[in-house]
Length: 222
Image (cartoon, rainbow, N blue to C red; front, side, top):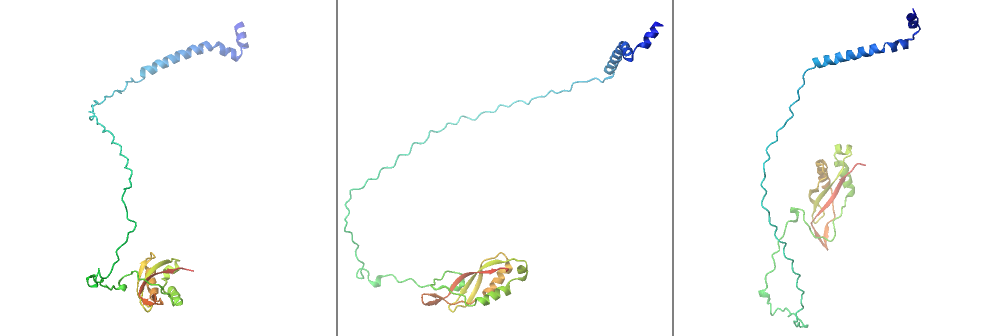
């Protein structure tokens, strides 16, 4: 009866401490049995073959030793120029050229004058007074008229450098494109405008001469 009274006065913590020994040894036995069971049924392991074989090293024959040539000899300094002790006559004269020594009948004939066709291709022609445009207002109207509508509406313009061959009367005889604008339609329009140009004759001193001149024809939107 005394033991029952004691048991009834024990707290839960006391009862847990009294049962600790049974729980401890039971846990140790269960862990031991579990470890033996794992080792017994665990598959056997084998180490993987990680060995390797090295290829046979081949010896390389070294090239023969190259003999380095000696450096070239130093270049000798140039000799110092020496003024010669030559006597120079200060009274030097050139014999006059006379017709007695060179008779006219023995002189070579003058070169033949070869006339070239200036209008064949753009070439330089000497002149002292350049030709001047006489119908600028008509040229301006031609620029507006010949401007390709598609390019004008799209705001595309450009400059065409055109060769003009102008005769002695100031009339345009030939035209051709010197530098393109990059648009064939503008180049063709510039040639049509070029036919409208009128010039004053070019002068070489007081003589009228045919000339080639290059002028820019520009198409631009306002």
